[in-house]
Image 1 (tube, protein in one colour):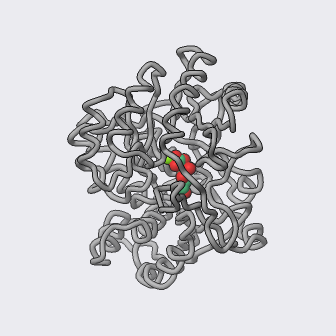
Image 2 (cartoon, rainbow, N blue to C red; image 1 turned 30 degrees about the vertical axis):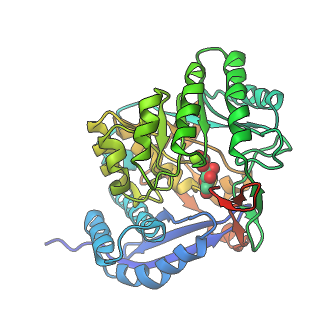
Length: 407
Ligand code: GCO
Ligand code: MG
């Protein structure tokens, strides 16, 4: 047997260039480095600890080429399977090992996955407006940047804060800095009165061609979701996202029976097992699992393979809390996977592009992972060290009566 390269170090870098990112760096005896994203928004340090204390020591001495075996070792070996912390940790290792395999062979990861099946990856970005005129301006601004697909979110009359929308017509950042989460007030009835008209106004404004998406962020009951799907039928959405909290997936049958508005779910899922019945019962049109939080490239490809059989397509999560390393990984999968539909691309603050130097690029509504060996992203550790971790949390939401609801 030929002598293989060996993992000699696995280090965790936590940096906060405007927001927190956790990155795994695996180093081999031959001097190669692989990078993996391990960012879990609002619970970053739990993953950092899991990696440092329980995964890094197990990696030392292993053959970096054995990606699948390492995945199985960490997944089965933990015994306590699944869950966001475990699966994000495994995902980070998986990404770093694919990065190393690419650098070892001199190939971009998409070549190792079978080569491109498309020239570029369709992407969608966010448009937000506190009121409808501001939303229309925001949609126009994104169209001017070349986007052919836009997610539209708007404020709701009577509510002071709404998920995914900033009052200043600026971009928004899901996690707010501070040691406790911001508390928001949510009113589903007010949202349901407002959202269909707001989205219809966007459709009227942009005409039939632009792909429009909307995220309900897990907030509706099955019946409310069915009604919203019906009300949006004429708007011709590309997808309606996360209509219900998908812990109970049976409820989606009710939603499906009442609307043909395409449904997308899965950004909080961690394994193929949570996607299984949604896919095999065709309760969704798009699966949104993220390459970081669902066990890396190796596992996302399994989800894609199951989805392909049922004509469900991939539209992975890609907000600002999915680092440029994970975005690269998602794009390598996107370029080489037949049933990949669209990649969310919220974008990053300029500083993030400096800390994570990347070969992937955006042009004219599409993303491309680039042709550099591996994933094509390098973390500038010196720059990263200037921005230490800062506590930040996703908001929590209460109804008007003070009881907790889904954010
Ligand atoms: C999306 C998401 C995000 C999440 C955030 C949580 O569709 O982009 O819903 O905005 O809320 O990534 O960390
Ligand atoms: Mg979402």
